[in-house]
Image 1 (cartoon, rainbow, N blue to C red):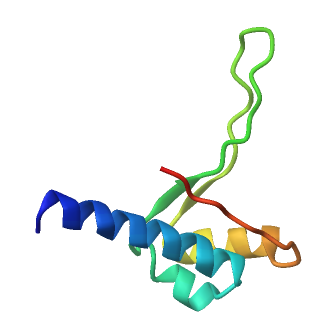
Image 2: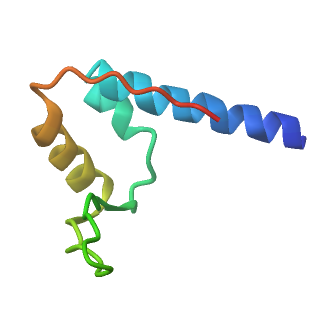
Length: 83
C-alpha cells in the first residue's frame, strides 16, 4: 500500500468514525475499534499550572461503546474532521 493509499485509508476511517457516532449506529461504530481498545476520556482543564483530574479509562470495545453511547445517546452531535 502506498503512502497516499495509507493516508486515504486513515481519512476514510476518521470520516466513518464521525458519521457512525453522529448517526448513533453503535453496532457499526463498534467495528471501527479493535476488541482490546483502551480509551481515555480526558476533558480536564489545567488551572494555575496544575493538570486537571484525569477522566475515566475504558478497556475493551464493549465498555468503550457502552460508555460513549450512554453519554451521548440523547445528544445531537455533528463532528467535523479537519486535516
